Length: 580
Image (tube, rainbow, N blue to C red; front, side, top):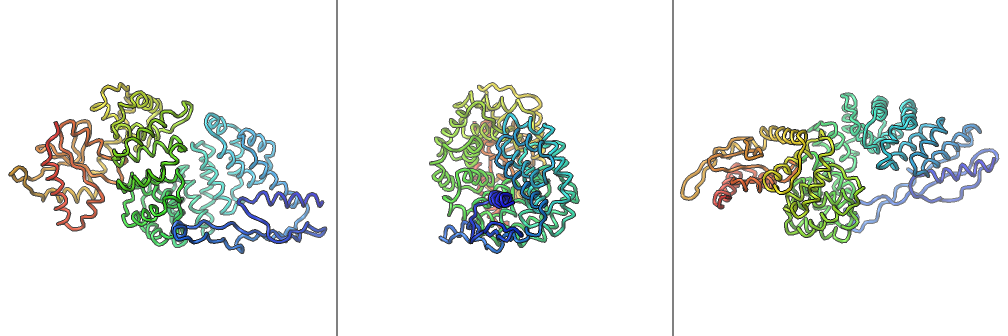
């Protein structure tokens, strides 16, 4: 009997999930019960970037919140004690496994395990299944049995357990009928647990349900109402997760977004490095142009660049480039911070880095761009690159005028893209549309066969997004000012006759004056690529091009400032020699 209890105490120690140490004596259980008390001292909590920059030590987590009292075990029956020991041992056994097939075999032999063991098995499978064996594992009947067992027992889970299972299900990048059914059951059970979720559990659950496409009105309204109740308790990372969940659902709730932005401004001094990265990442995906928030976060980030890991630095620069919030000096700061670790970056991070340089038109860093491109093309041939990484890489080569220098690799990357089916996501298609135009106008020496279905998908994506832009409030403001604009050019007075969403070579431009051959686009934060490549190609066709920076336009607050800004930009373009 004593051996059983020693085993239980050892297993409990191993099953705890973060570093800790024992405090005080913990005697062996006596014959009449288990009088020992299990007590923990938590590791120091994570300090915010502001606290680190000011030399403040990481705050310790109150031990009162983490103390676990084991005196109640004395009232358990022997069967209950053995059941607990068995559960903990099975959990630890599953956690020690790294082979997905071994995990599946173990769970098949222990199908009577409790829901916690099944949840840990699902998480372990998601962490270790990779590459070629992914499809084999997710199609395995034993994997389906684990999901079925979890789905049938969710009613017995508390809110934290539901969030843990939801988080584990997100580790599988594709959906199967079984994973979708698990998401449906998670949603159905969760909406019955009103006011029971913590902020972290709620946002994790929302992310998982959105990732699996669980978008019914009842689920969305539940997450929204719970988030509104907990708005004053949301941490910056929780705010990012809520925004990302609603983005994946395709819903923009202005009231909720405004409250979350206000909450993030209130908590600006508690941002950690991961929170900065995640908030800017979701802001760039949403095209969330909240200048005051972005300035506060950027100020915090650039004061503490050394606190970020190389991977975080790449994601940070990638997000800011898409938000058009990087200056030349900012790019140089990122490059200096990343320089010692560029060789340690993976293929995805290298693609994001060269895309950042291309988006910011950092031609003074062309040697770095060339070095990054060489690292990308020298990756092992069996390494799997995502569609997004391939498209970012090829678009960057076009924008940095390096496509002919890496001609064979550029062609090979595009051929790898075209072997895949066109995605439903319009962002890579819009980037590819730029590349197809460059192949048609500037890179005729690179012979790439473009499948008709890809060409049609790219054309459709560009046409659809241009139609959305046409009636935006921003463009209505600019057209109204342009209609009133007057000026002098070569001794003659001019007045623009701008027409919206007009064909211009292989492209469509937001505004075009056919008489002056003046094509105008706005560099908005919602467009996935910089318009500089597009305008370079149009200049080759003889058009004058004017690219209005979104943030410069927003700085012109009054009508007078806006008119002055537009007149200056138009005169600058008209006075320049026309391209031949």
